Amino acid sequence: MTLTQTQIREYDRRAIDSAETATATFGIGCFWGPDAQFGAMDGVVRTRVGYAGGTKLDPTYHALDDHTEVFQVEFDPDTVAYRDLLNRVFKSHNPQHQTRKTQYQNIVFAETEDQQAVLDEFLATRGLTADGIGTRIEQLSRFYPAEDYHQKYKLRSVSSLMDAFETAGYGDDELRESPIAAKLNGYAAGHDVGIDEELSVPDRGTA
Image (cartoon, rainbow, N blue to C red; front, side, top):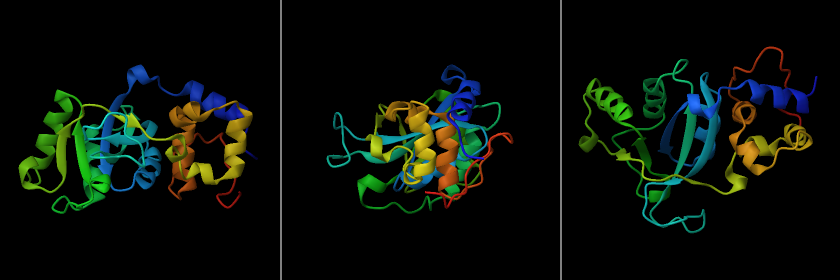
């Protein structure tokens, strides 16, 4: 059974609204991989990639200046905790090491006082401090979404899935913010995803 426009619309319609989610932003190298990896997680509802951590206004991929590639996740805090996201982030890189190229640096943004408190406790239980590791720990001042072709990068390589989104009338903005696109982006990258049992997905090799 192929993915249909009805399945896409219904999955997204049933997804938790952004007003009920929390948001977290991280950088751990090139943003394509983490966007897919975290999008596949249970409790993660939406993902997007972009640029943050610098001072340049309106950065672009070819004019990043002092910004870093980052990914942003909207998650249901009743299903996945911020601590769980931190755990995966710190397992995905060596916090004692920092790459010299600003574009791909490791960075954790605390977006709220609660996230800062959880982050402080998370580091303390591991004998770490924000000042004693290579990973940058910062407050998020602004997130700039990356260009459309970077959003759901793995999914965009599977034409059979993209055809279904096009048939459903999804433009680039809708694809970026689509809950099912976040899951299928993870699927296209080879991750196990928690898509509803009634949703049948084509083989990964279909293109």
